[in-house]
Image 1 (cartoon, rainbow, N blue to C red):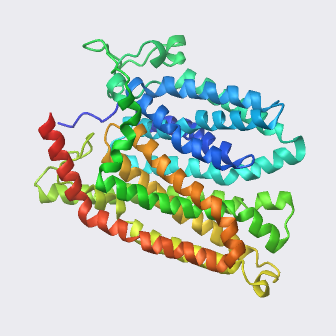
Image 2 (cartoon, rainbow, N blue to C red; image 1 turned 45 degrees about the horizontal axis):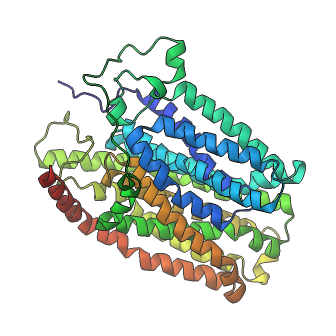
Image 3 (tube, rainbow, N blue to C red; image 1 turned 30 degrees about the vertical axis):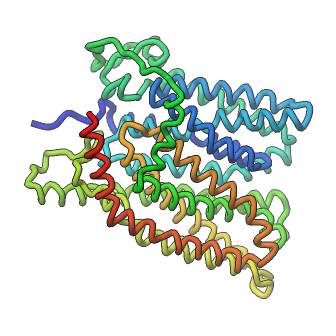
Length: 468
């Protein structure tokens, strides 16, 4: 007898949902980079998910999506005609706070509807869409500002956000498992997509056995993501992911200054120089997503053979068996991605430092190719990292992503603040050599996670079982 599916959605419908939340998730990176990327906006992207993510884990994904997009749209409308600098700064922060929720809530949705066996591919695709928006933001911003003025940027974001909000209101059902279960629970009120009101509901829906009682919201609700910092395995993943994100952010943020000074590009050409970065941000997670699903299946099969389980038995539950090696399943391919990332970062710095090379015709292709490799490998690492953190925090997809964003954006903000001064002081070659060495120093964290993570996770699960 086959086991009941983890979720009622077909694979095709899951992809439709992930594409929708992927588009929604692009607003966080797009808004922070499309116009005058600033540290305050980066900080808001890191902090505000602690609020939105915690709410979505308790009150549902759908309504928090809608509310946060309303905040985002209002902020963009004001920004489109902001009369002075003070208003611009205030509503830029509000804009960032509204868009930041899309990242953490999207991860929560993926955890709601996908089993661990298939989650890697969906998570990696989602990582790619988010990172693509960060890299492509300066391109869009430069084109819009150059041809229509800087205020057109906010008009563009308002229209695009309005379309996405309408799509969510019409098509996206609630997925939070305490509300929607495995997708077969009949939804009501704000949790029900409008299309189900206008048309016939899916035939597999059924009423709940008992009325849903949402948990009360307290200060602890919003602080709950911070509690993940005390878990050793989660903390190691957060720190390593933060280091990789910071290095990629420093490469991206310094692109304009380096390419303008070294290759004397105009504004349009500078915008186009970000394209390899954006393409790499998509390519890396796409490839690693397929490899991650394959490696999970191989580890799952080995586990079943070792424990004498039938092939039809599924490991893909909300929590893994206490001895299931999820760390090895997720981190298998990171072993070759990290060295490629480090080497690409090292070579990039020297590729833009020496005039004897940069003055050669066509040499600009070298740093652009390295841009692609850095974006591909860094975002492949970040996709693996996000998937593993989600696995380590079952049922808390949005909250775990919120603390993940806080760490990454904190590291990124610090790095972005100093990269220009560092390059000016020691040169691009030495600066990026230093960043490559930082990555080398951080890499043992992955090895510790590989060998010790399962023991720490087992101890945590034992404590949780005793507390029940």
